Length: 205
Image 1: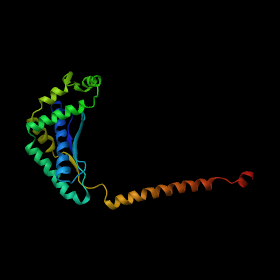
Image 2: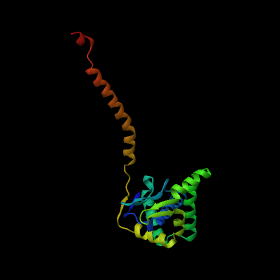
Image 3: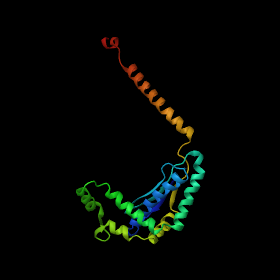
Image 4: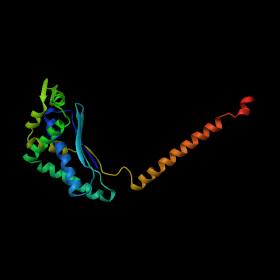
């Protein structure tokens, strides 16, 4: 299941609340659908966004027999988050996790300085100045998180893919049929080349 929520053109005031919300939901979906319910292997959430617009997505994979129950649990999870939001403790933990996950990619002091120069200070064209990302994360409140959740996740402007792209039988047909079709193509190409190749008698005549 893939729920893609439409995001309008880039809005600076929503950037950091959306990033924190995506990280929080990504973690919570994993604990809820995989660890607690055992219904999904790789649930997740994230966003793609620029000055032209983008999407906030929530996705999860389910085995075919678990599909109805998994879809029901996923919708319940989204509705619960929109209504209840997150606690201050959860916000603080998620914010710290975002910052540490970026810093951990920098194994040396020099590379850590480079990371802060390249990522921690982002240029904001709307304000005409550089923005301290860590400071912006720390400004985000739980009220802002709930506001963007209600603004975007409650929207009717979203696309829901709630059916498997293929059945199990179709998958096995594709898995077995592809090598057979490839082998048949190779045999046909070789045969065509042989019948087109002139023999020695034809060349001498």
